[in-house]
Length: 356
Image 1: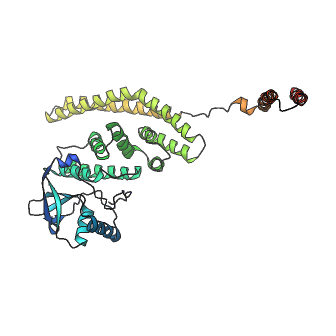
Image 2: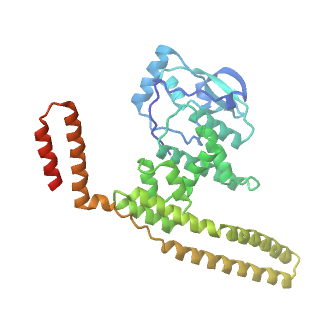
Image 3: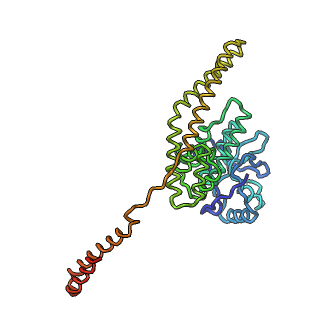
């Protein structure tokens, strides 16, 4: 997976290892370029051309290496790269044999991935779309790790925690980023990426059912003047319907977890009667949840957003004329005070206004 990033002010674009990673440095030493292995989990790889690597090599030749690369030992004399892929390529282009590196203490794949993310997101500026792509890659890597390590599950909180650290944002903002990535439909994501929808609105929309999101997308597609306002009103109305049922659905969730646990215990103990009891309970819970969601869907479908009527004052021609006449009267009164116009003329103008 490759991403294109905005070019920072520094021509070398060298990224220093963060303080979180610095604390894990075992030592700094010169290592052989031939012993460096590129990291297959590097989700921050960029589509760098030969020209850009040459540009970096020229800069390093003139100014030296601004930041050390970061690696970890592989145990066979080789080193896996954590940060500095472009710098390594530039060094090889220059024909160098060694490079200065911070050797990190890494105890697990997850520690390595954390260090990799830290080292590659500290000084970059991302668009909303680039950030979403990185969250996608982080999520994919963590889920892959979780699949290979069943005792270490990855949930939304885990991804939000990593996202908050990676982009130096609050947990609340990180949850918004993750929610948008996981739940927002693509048409609305596209509007968010193009800044037609704010972060807060995109986050609010992402919590709504897909059918409601599709309706909001249609509102924006119509390109009406009041599309944003109507979409916000509609989202608020849908959220009110959802919130009304939230407590009962949460109770159902707890009841379902308890019944599943008891059914599993009954099956383990070969208690068919007790197992049948809790299976019946699970069916009852499922039916109750379906009824709630069906009714919720009907309520949401019945929501109508009616545009507010235009002010009758603006639509009424007589009011418009009356307002204009009053403005002229005030203007004449000001002119009269200045003494620059004949009073008889001003009086004639006032009489004409009275006739109007």
